[in-house]
Image (tube, rainbow, N blue to C red; front, side):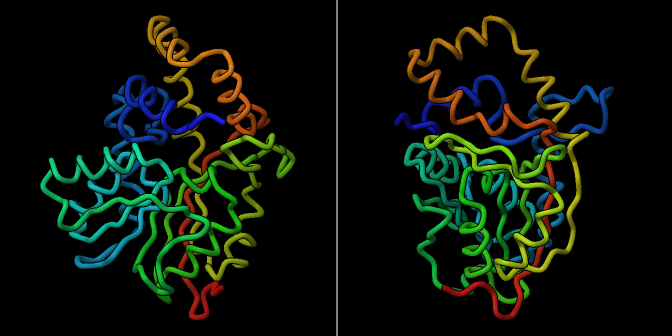
Length: 265
């Protein structure tokens, strides 16, 4: 199987931004660049995280580190980022060194569904469009385990708004079945997490981001295709199937706190 992230990551950097997530636009008339809109979405998430100086924060699915570094500067916190991509970890740690934040921000290879951290390790967890690449139940239970009681999770995730929980991915998919928004409180409660806020941001994120992605020049789209052989193109298409098959793809901002008992293994 191809390394999905090593193929798609460089393409995202070229065609989108170093933030591997949707942008946030105020509306269809907002002419902000992708870089501005993705940073705006990061800031919205960071604000919900409510981290205090000195807190230890986990960035679950950190990409190449841009949101983690922005968080560290804004809130004066320590950030540990994890991803299963060694290439992304190398890029992220190099970025932290170049930006003078290596003393407070570090990145390592780790599986978000089986984290190498003790219980109650973090004051907060950030998961920016990353849980959708994992078994949600296992990932959320791990979040509940590593968060200290009262600690906060802020995540963005994709949901199916029209036909809940009906999209089944192929065996090699990198996106898991999309839950319905109505299912999310149960997912959180089963993981030792108490919902604080579930905010549907679809109109400001998914619709406007996809419109801008589709407006990429023919030259850029050709360059994307040229990075992959036919087998790789088919594998990436299969991996993305739960997203493309969604009847009404939505984006939700999830805020939750860890209960006293959490989700201990």
